[in-house]
Image (tube, rainbow, N blue to C red; front, side, top):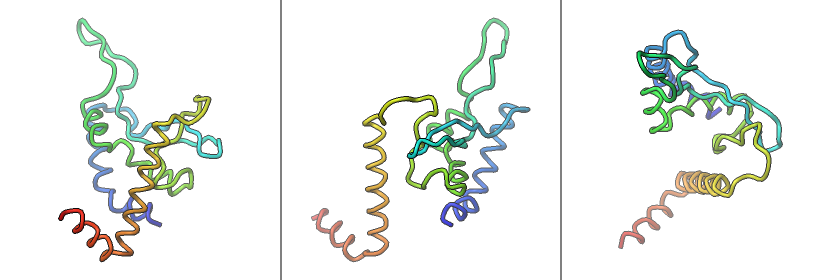
Length: 146
């Protein structure tokens, strides 16, 4: 339900980003789907905005590859992951998930990913607590500021 609301709220942003990608790289797709593994080890396609050029192209004396200028902005502001709400609606991941491991990754979850997930869960818990108990949070914050 929350993800569906997010899609409606983010629709203008989705349209602007898609238009910017199409202007910068006409004829190519706006989205890229990456194979990932969920917590249970099942494969799913993680949907993201495309930030990289497709293939290589030759301009004069050099080959151009890599991140598009609009892709750099999307990555810097973490907007390339907005379409992941589609994965949330499909049930592949939760709103708090941090993009699961690549499908070709083998081995344990890296500690940095575990700490990022723990931080995200703590922030969500704090936000829920703040919504449910605003006087307690306000008292706690005012005590910290003294």
